[in-house]
Length: 232
Picture 1: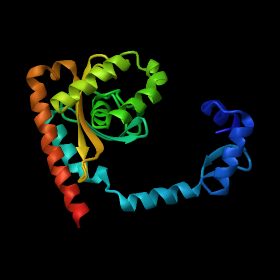
Picture 2: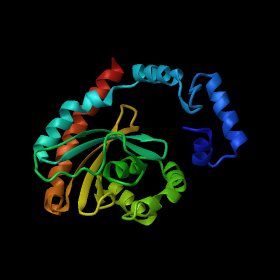
Picture 3: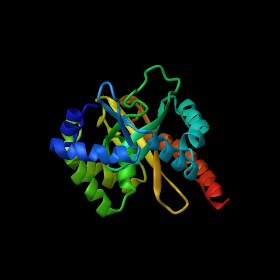
């Protein structure tokens, strides 16, 4: 990105953006192309990422078989999500055999917490004070999602806490419903969310229980594996 792009994206004055980039550059977190003068991530980011990977479980690998089984059993599309600050990030997607696919999210997609079933499940698993902080952080960004607003998200979070699963009714894409649950580590902290999305006709009340049971079976399996790994 150009300096002007960074400045505009962050809403900073040009001298402030420049000082921050220079400071990040001194630590190798950012570097500047000498020809284009554009900034990019530096080598230290890769080093930090590799250090983190050694300390945390590879959730994509842990879930790979379970997501495939989930997609095949339900026929629908399975998603794995992580929380990143006040955002939810899709890190894996597996398609089921049902011919009409619900591609609401691509791998790598980042959305405000509360937009989508897995995202609602993560928000519902948070402490109330942290939940309120998320609403403050995402309030201005929700205008980019015309099918949902803060009132709707708050209602969906309350329902998720009561029922034990989250339901997204067209919040991401009209005509698509999603069901999601949070995944917890040994300490009881939510570290991920697993969800299923399909056209609305496939997520009617009489089928939601089936989808929730399928999700919960995978959650129990992965949480046991996580517990074993953390105890080793």
